[in-house]
Image 1: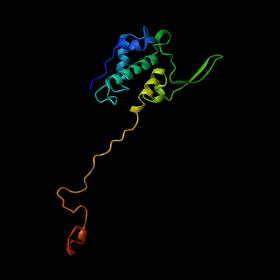
Image 2: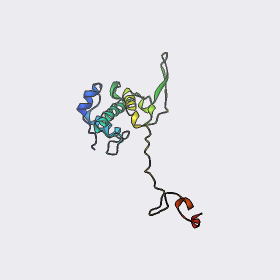
Image 3: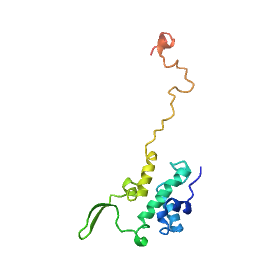
Image 4: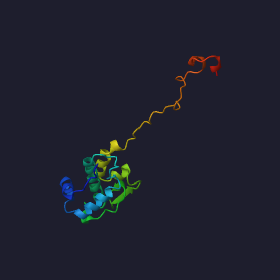
Length: 160
């Protein structure tokens, strides 16, 4: 299996809104950061490297938005979390900061993160892996298939 390799040109083709807002060097750093949220090794839960690349590119866009790439001046807004209330007169904004990186709320801060969260739903489900069958008969035992005493064909001395 292979790792997903970042291509700035392909990323910009998919997310043209970041043209001029995110340099190739910044995008490469965001891609490395995205690897903290989705493993980009042979041990990744997402086995198909092409699918993993699409997901990592979504994360690069999400991280770029959180870094303020689409904000005027290219700086983060300073608001952390989701807007819980807003008013217009004398401008007031309140945010809710129940955010932990890697949680649904953290990903919901941008449309890219939410897309990633929805796309990775199959990988967040528990998977049942049954244990190997266990043989309860000791090795070399000729116990008669579990029968005891007279049922096993023994005489009176075979009774328990």
